[in-house]
Structures are given as structure tokens and as C-alpha cells.
Image 1: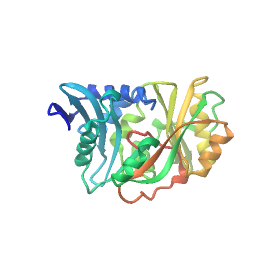
Image 2 (image 1 turned 135 degrees about the vertical axis):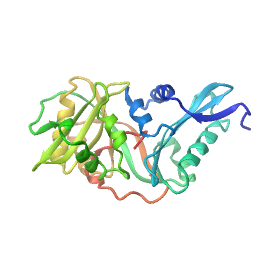
Image 3 (image 1 turned 120 degrees about the vertical axis):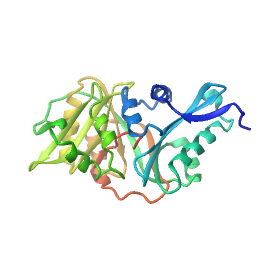
Image 4 (image 1 turned 90 degrees about the horizontal axis):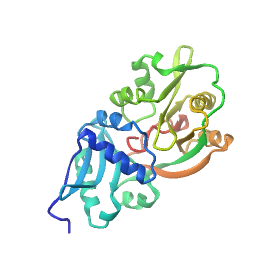
Length: 281
């Protein structure tokens, strides 16, 4: 039975940093400056569970638009698990996003069966690979900030179920991050972002029209951070992306499944070489 003094409420901005700290403790290695990008995307979409005033669990339920939302940060502190607190947090998040939206999440292996019971189906697996930064900057790479923001938003929405201009505006401006683009005939045909994480750096997203463009962007992002550990989450459904990580002899270290409540979005997965994040999709 859930205690009467357990409540679920909307987080304040400062409390999202707590969720990121908990995520780091779970071994998920979130970005060090992700909180601001996340909060600005949906200021009401981060929920905190409190027991007698003590934070004990959290979840994010970000509504991108009226048709699509994404769940992340579903955590209950270990000593408070098994009491039904997590289920109340979960139900509050699902109620916030509503039954009409298609809802996505990245589920860890241990929770995937539970998510299936809640109506989620697996679209593909995301495999986290680890490598080491370094190498030579390839030709043809540009600073993404030289591309018009409108063109970036239009390109990005080919790979995501919703337009996300607010998120992108903050994501590409994160401190200590780098965002590169690749142009062909004057048009954006690929981009990638690398940002500092609790351990090393994380690449995401890495979207490109073909494997050669993706590899050039990948080399550029590695070259920006010599000798540092670098991680990125690759859809196993993209054979070209798997070929790329195998050529560079990267090591798989972690796995999740991208799951949805309704139809699996019709996205060009063969051009998604790294997903943006596991928390917001």
C-alpha cells in the first residue's frame, strides 16, 4: 500500500540536476549539461516522487506536440523500490502525456517486459558503443551554427517523430559541446553533436544521408576530443552504422530498446547513425 505522505509533483528546474545525478548512479552516463535542454523542451514534463518530503523517484514525460511524447529518467532510489511508488510515478507520467499521443521510450533490458505489459512495442535496439577520441579532422566539415536554424530543424524532423526546435536550439548550444554539419550542393545532408558526459563524451545525434557522410562527421567529432572516452547509441536496425562501429573496433557496453505505444514511426533508420539521447529520444 502506497503511504499517504507520498506525492508526485512537477519538478523545479534545479531538481532536474538531481534526476541526472541519479541517472549517472544507474550507469546511464547522461550529459553534464543536458538539464537545461531537457527542461526547456517541456517545463511541466519532469515529475518528482516525494515520500514525507524526501525525493525518492522521478520520471520525465516530455510532450513534444499533441501527437508525440517521450518518457525517460524513470528511477526509484534502490531503498524505496518494491513499494508501489514507481508505479504511481509511472501512472502520473502516462496520464500527463495522455492516451492520444504516441509515446516513446528507451527501455533497459530488465524493464522491457514490464513496458510491453503497459502497451509498448519494440521498434529496434540501441546499442551503446565506446571508443576513444582522436584522429584527423576530415575535409568538408562545417560548424553547424553556420547553417540556418530553420534548415537544421527541417533536416532534423526527417529523423524524429516531431519537430523539436526548442530542444535543438538548446542542444547545439550546450557548454563544451561541438556541433558539425556536412553540406552537399549547398544543402545540409548530415549533422552530429558531441557533448561532455559524466564519463567522457557522448555523440548524439548523428544523422546523415549516407555512410560516407556519417563517417566524416564521426571522424570530426572524435578529432575534437583526443584521448577521451567517447560513447554513442547506435540503432541495431541500421546495418551501415553497425558496419561503421565495427570498422573502428568500438566495444558494445550497454543496450536499450526503443519502444512505442502506438505505430512505430516511419523514419529512415538507415540514416540514423546515433540517436540523440535515451531520455528525450
